Image (cartoon, rainbow, N blue to C red; front, side):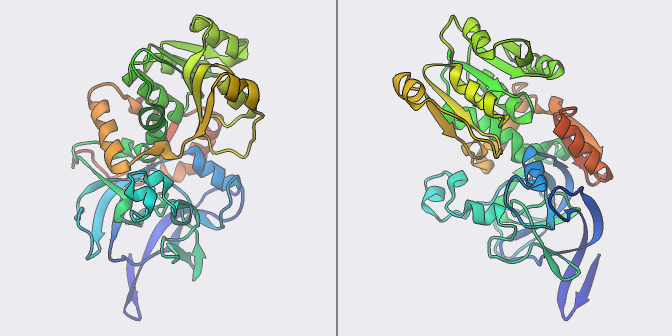
Length: 383
């Protein structure tokens, strides 16, 4: 609903608020949404994925202010646009992703994930101009990714949004804005394996499975999925893994070497953030191989810089958001999905918005690979 106070329109929304570090989500209907700016979109939220990055902020692994409205894998329908918006109109269906300024050297070079203002714009808890995205009883409520998709309505900048075909089911598309584009982009944009090369992916959650499917798309002849949950490994095989390893059943490094004729893999991706696993992702590399660390984690690793990085010419790199350009990469992933090459929907399970704490617990335990909150249960796909 909207109320008019001193000629300023204040919109009340329902949002899942985390009041303090490690608190549960509390769904409340008294949150005030920021006014629509000149290059803003007001978006009616249909659904949002839950990502491990949401959990990292909820439990305080990353520095952030509380209270906060999390969520950064949103999909919805544009309700209003600011006067300077040129690419969207009311009624457009959109997937939301991170915000990049578009003006710094990195953005102008086409690498928005390295935006010089990335942290300020996405992880400061405020809008890019420093204003509050949300307030409650007159007090600021922090945001995430200039998006905060655990809401019934949100306001984002035009650069946050990617237009998608209205014929597609918005309920399943939100995770393309982070988890899926991060895993796939790490492979397609950063590692860039050539046909015939090999890759091992540690952790077969949403990010890991996306990386694995991208390895298959790239033509890798060995796509090795590594996890401790057999059900996830079974899904990895269904989605295209050539081989799977349950790391609880023996020496992972030796198992990877055995699968590659003793050489090791050309590329590895770690999505777990577990110290011993990250270290194994370097040990499984062939000479000259590259490992990408992409988990949000406070953990550290011990690297043998002489034997591994120098003598064996191995490389360890960090990758943010798959070095993606959401407006390019998300449509590409949708095309791969339509071709039957990127079956991300098989990782998803729908939950009611009111079940957000259950969905987050299932994500944390591994029971559900990609929980998706249905925020608008009245939404009908294709309309």
